[in-house]
Image (cartoon, rainbow, N blue to C red):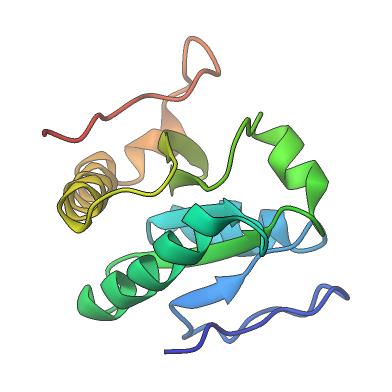
Length: 151
């Protein structure tokens, strides 16, 4: 499955695409806003990063296996340094879980398929359980809630 590409000009991805590129120009629309309706994994990496080249195809296969229950947004950190900076990324790859417009969890480096499935299952469950109440209840702090996968 090939990701739906989003040009640097900020063109929106196909609304039915489950894998797409996020850029500085379209980040709010394609990640933050779309995560209000469906959970999103934000994969921040770089072409020169060996662990990224391992993790990316695995995340794409899992996206197909989960049949649209989550969206996968890819970010090329070299071309979108503000996104990496905004998320205080310290290494690649960094995968960030978004649900209802906010970051709820993250991990760094390549992981096993079992870890990824638990991480994704927890994200999907969190998204379903918190529904739109996450949008109505102000958080006492703006720190993201963490849902750690059960290992």
